[in-house]
Figure 1 (cartoon, rainbow, N blue to C red):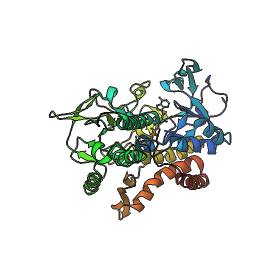
Figure 2 (cartoon, protein in one colour):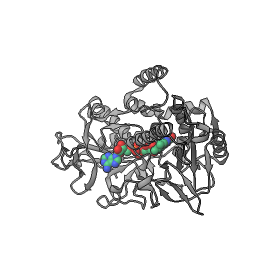
Figure 3 (spheres, rainbow, N blue to C red):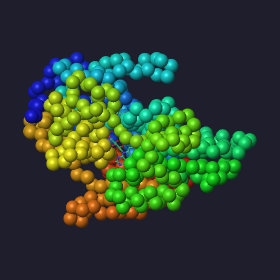
Length: 452
Ligand SMILES: Cc1cc2nc3c(=O)[nH]c(=O)nc-3n(C[C@H](O)[C@H](O)[C@H](O)COP(=O)(O)OP(=O)(O)OC[C@H]3O[C@@H](n4cnc5c(N)ncnc54)[C@H](O)[C@@H]3O)c2cc1C
């Protein structure tokens, strides 16, 4: 069922009460693309009032977080200021975290914001909508494993990734300056969960830790003192890849010196290491948890919207939530099982990107009083980057609907293209071209690892 712009109700929030109000909550891989394009096409031409509700002030594309954690990416070069983006692209930026919803009055409730000294930045308030798109992504799922919250670091936000990187460099500095020799586990990183994120992080870390040590921390012997262990409960790593490719990935990691442990289940994370089912204990200074995702807690009961046990909003093929035609969900926080399939669309940037492009068209249709068409996800395959060593993956539909295995430079180019598509959706292709050239020029004269 579609809803015409005339279904508006009078609401207290927002200066443009006469215009149809589209509110997107969450400015991530999908939400920011959508709100930017809605602003360009509708907001700037006063055809609708477009707003983004976002709890952070800057955006960083989430698949870059393992590079931030490893120290091979400078966040300041890739983050985007929401306020500026809103100004350039004709939408309003509403800084705040969604903490609730009033579907009857069409209001999104936002929490108050305070600075580090407890001073109020923005008060608790509500924003009115006519169409609402929820795109608040996912958070790590620790499945109730003891000690994860206290002792492991998740890679959900740039702050967490930067915290991991600081702790890693601090551990190297201590090992270099202490009087006694490096003790077992002191420079040991355990990564729990060998999906794409954990696997990519292990390869990237292997390179960057050696890069840091090479800058004069000569009391550390990288081959003897530094150890990276990747733990996976399933019987193979990166299960999104065909078995042949996940075997090659495991072999490549082994050649780098990354210890890969499959069929190993973690029962507890402790301050000094990781406990496995079966009794083995792996001493470790740093533990990263990357073993699955779930929707943020606010989705558990969002004014009666249907959600799964993992807090994802159940949506229909139009991405409308099952109990409210005005509310859509996209990306990691949406649970969509497509017709003829048994598994939901996986939580990936590729899906968020396609859903954002789809919703842009459907919201335009809605404003023109046209019916909404169903969304169809097209899986273009999966690629896993092993940093500078290799990129491995399969691209779908190239040979009569079958997958094509790719590796090396071409695979790396394809891997990077997903980020370029995201940047192009936010800035246009011309700016992306200039930025890429500028970044590659300055990168030549700077350290390739973060040293502080
Ligand atoms: C290290 C890492 C590597 C990855 N690599 C890949 C890859 O190679 N390929 C791939 O396809 N996918 C990859 N992914 C997965 C990919 O990042 C996600 O699938 C994608 O970011 C989901 O997009 P999204 O728009 O749904 O959510 P996100 O990009 O997570 O954005 C959600 C936004 O909502 C905001 N938000 C959250 N809660 C609230 C709230 N209550 N109120 C207001 N705002 C809120 C957040 O601040 C954030 O800006 C990777 C993920 C990680 C962590």
